[in-house]
Length: 304
Image (tube, one colour):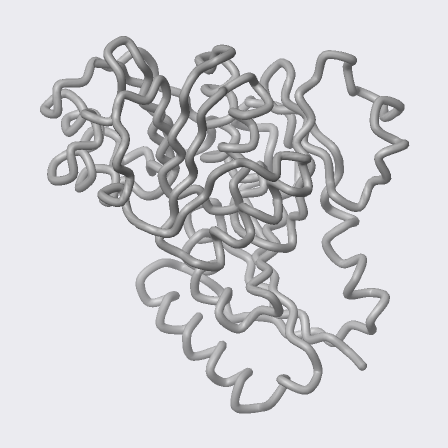
């Protein structure tokens, strides 16, 4: 048996679009994003510009028709944004199993958040170079969903959560994806949490990651912001895309979900779209506290 590796080299802006287009073809919806450099640094020059998006397909699904379909999808996507054709490579079972492991190691985000690959044995935790005794350890399987902590948008959300989440807080994660942000908030001391996502696969992945982190009671649900019946959250975090964030602020009352004095963390914003989001926050009655920037991505922290 072999596995077909499909890879596309792009940049941070194109990677998310490519990942979403390739995910329906991937085994267990697993998409791997590789970006070389120092993942633990917030220095804009610490990471290389290129991001490689990879998926894996079992041999019985590898057909000329499927390859042509993938090539067509990337071709049409490339007419909107410069993206080269996909590359196809056959891997043996053992090579596939280790394909993403060579590029995914433990790393730090912020001061105390430590991202730990799921395949590292629990007995190794605490003996790894760079880990500190008071670190908040997030155990994740990067092969299951977008949002493993590697992408700048997720990194900035984690930095903001580390700064603003206090023990006993309530936190709502809108567009939870892999659940990493809700899991981080729980480990930072939040007492009441909810992760919501329109994607059923994302919700299942978030639940699996919560169990992986010994948080079986963490609540995730499929739905939109409108499906969240409770308001007055101490922290609301939204890591989606700028146009969606603007719509949530303009039409869905996103700011109203934040408790007085609470914090709204917004990410997934390309730099040239930041002004639109800033304007939408102010028009919704919010006050900008600070912005974070990694490469051409921006995160905005606001309050009531």
